[in-house]
Image (cartoon, rainbow, N blue to C red; front, top):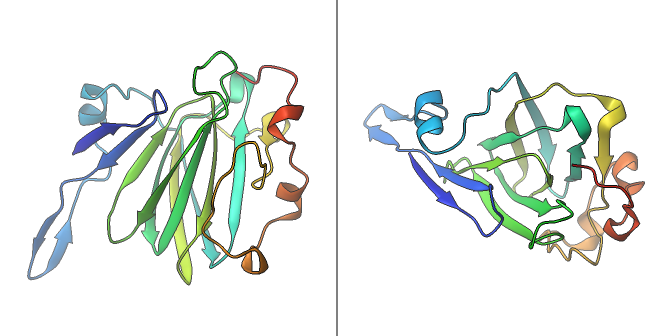
Length: 183
């Protein structure tokens, strides 16, 4: 596996080594020992999976306090634009984001530590999104920043008339409205 640091401290792109032959292919998507050797020692406790259609934008989400989560995300089917936003108040990259295309074809994964918002848009007809988390879900600690917050400026690569967003995500805050330190 190849581990590549991104411009957001702690966010790491993971590229598995894929073995192909006439039967198909094989790769390890997670190996605790290799991840630990590369600075990721999180103990994952839950796997989550979603199926979404073209135009769906999920996010931008996080959990706060003692329920904050680190995530390891990847795509089983289709293609998404995966977005991570730094919301650590004292970080030099606070409010900055990265966007990485994850797909079944490229098999890339993204490790997202605590202190970041996460979301994705579906660029293919459908996408199956899988993510491992190192803490259990807690509704009371869930937070959401609007996907279209202009101060963050994400280009989700979906035309406005094709965007599909949940009611809950439409009720998200603007980054400038966050008055407390979530982490």
